[in-house]
Image (cartoon, rainbow, N blue to C red; front, side):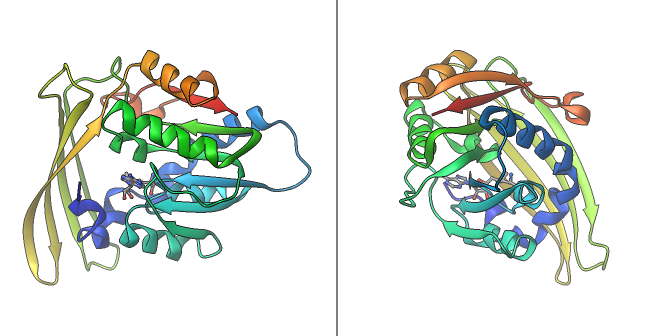
Length: 249
Ligand SMILES: C[S@@+](CC[C@H](N)C(=O)[O-])C[C@H]1O[C@@H](n2cnc3c(N)ncnc32)[C@H](O)[C@@H]1O
């Protein structure tokens, strides 16, 4: 499914998702992966699947040599500017095969685009295929079936150089609670040199119970652990799960 946010709206992406907002969260991801991998004298390698604009890698690269995969070339171009020393690869996290293994795999919010159990299983197989024995994957969905609730959120930001502005309302809702998806409708007002325009961008995202997550990762061959996630400011109003899925090969 094509998303305007990761395509023609990429010039506005940094206004929606600031790199500095990721620092605390990435510190948690790195601590969990370090804990699973144990002490090491040398730098480790990390493959991020669905790395988007590279906000996680910007902080993770202090500890890991990062390879970043994403479906969207425009999103990867944002990341290339932020993380010029990282390797970037266009690919689908369900099917990409780089032909080598890493110490760690991170799959953050891009995992939300896995809409069926088969999608999720394919993502698990990709992570497994890219890990050395003893390597660790961390899956961090925005929410799980148990934490989801209908919700709206809003955001406003202007570029410091005055060239662009963004106003956004996001509506998360679940038209059919019996299936494995929910809907996120974004309404954007976007201002640039051409004036102000409105864009509606609909994202269908996957929703799975903790038990489904555990089963699918186990079936892929992983030893699975559910680890706590500190939500900080995110926890107040948004349906973020307080769980991450650590999967050790
Ligand atoms: C919310 S953005 C990721 C943002 C990222 N966490 C960051 O901080 O920059 C979601 C990303 O998932 C990517 N994506 C969606 N489906 C994908 C797939 N099947 N394979 C790889 N990437 C995918 C999109 O292109 C988008 O860049």
